[in-house]
Length: 282
Image (tube, rainbow, N blue to C red; front, side, top):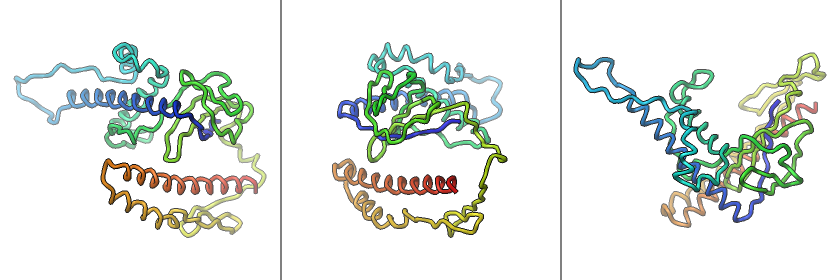
């Protein structure tokens, strides 16, 4: 069984600057690798299914895949030494993100559903990076040790269950601060609990008038946090629209708008978790 636990980070100013620097460098590398994929895609495609007897055929390149682009990382560190400050696995995860985005664009996901053309990431669109591997015991109290980044302080409000191992750590920038998401796994815990072991089964029906209706007839109403916050969101959005692009006032208004939306998302998530917990305790 695999879970994801999220904790808020308490970073010093120097650590915030380091996170932003890593995000900026990884974003540039992501855009460079994505541009390399698009160059191959444009050079090796043909809009017609036939050509004259005499025509010029360009030299075809090999398809840049995950492994070929990962091999370019050592040369990247030689050409741009500042990339050597980033952990090698974090850079490899950046290559993996490009590979996943481009594969979904060309081939689709496991269900065959294709995604749109991958975007080049601006500063506000590249918000996270992942450590695919950590040390054996990276948490000591409320201190998390990240390879080649150092020790970071977090609000350790939810302890890791006994027997679970921390597989990955993802640092994410949100409107109200920085968070770390720990992916934990324990192979001894089954993915699906057998039906025979369930003592008090209950059925639920998700609806539009009510959030859900239980099999015993009781209902859970829709909190409508977004509806209640629409007036405030509209007011802040109006300030953003009327402010000059690139000005400090616009940046402050955008930050305020992001925090307002973040609050709505957090309250929604809180209701979802509490409702699920209530169903399990029945």
